[in-house]
Amino acid sequence: MNEELKDNIMGALELVIDPELGVDIVNLGLVYDVDMNEEGLVTVTMTLTAMGCPLAGTIVDQVKRSLADIPEIKDTDVNIVWNPPWNKDMMSRYAKIALGIR
Image (cartoon, rainbow, N blue to C red; front, side, top):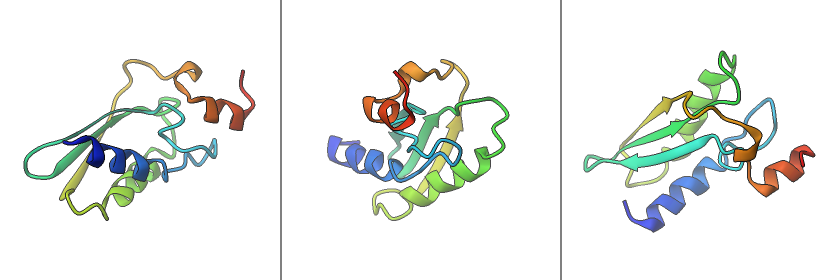
């Protein structure tokens, strides 16, 4: 996958807002990796802020919807992982400011 496509994917993922925190999943540091195979299947490897998050299904659906309009992508798989565990140090400066975290 070229850098332009990866930038487009990450930009689309910035539209996915964590419903509990009100900040997008990219700036929260929840997206660990994005990969695409030759058939156009994109795999988004990500985590959530907490195990057992009741909104996990909603976030996965939003990820798939956000990437649906990118022509190179034929399908999306969301791989939720727990290692490495998410922590506030993974957030961007923007997310920390938005949430009032130092």
